[in-house]
Amino acid sequence: MRLDKFLKVSRLIKRRTLAKEVADQGRITINGNQAKASSTVAVGDTLQIRFGQKLVTVEVTSLKETVRKDEASMLYRIVKEEKIESE
Image (tube, rainbow, N blue to C red; front, side, top):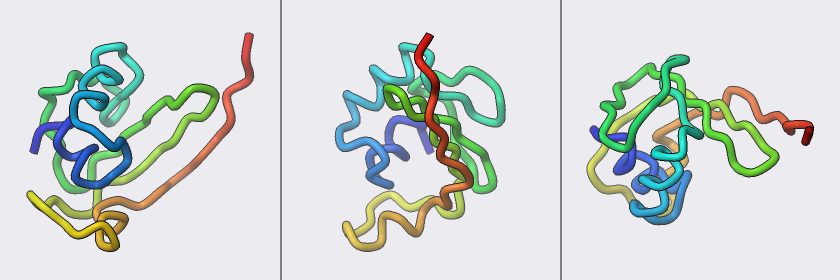
C-alpha cells in the first residue's frame, strides 16, 4: 500500500493530500530510509513521522483498504512519542 494512502486510512494524517505534502517535505522515514508519498508500506515496517515539535514512531501491524473510524488505530502500534527540542 502507498504511504500516503496508509496514513489517511489509519487516520495518522487526516487527508491524503496533506500526507503527500508531509512526505514530500522529507518528514517521514520508513525503516530509517527517507520516504516519498509513493513509497510502499508493508506489515512490520517502522514509520517515523515528524509533526511540528513531536516525533512519532509507529509500527505497521495491518494493512486494509478501508476501515471504520474506531478500527483505524488497529492498523498501527505507537512505539515511541518524543518531543523535539527546538534549535
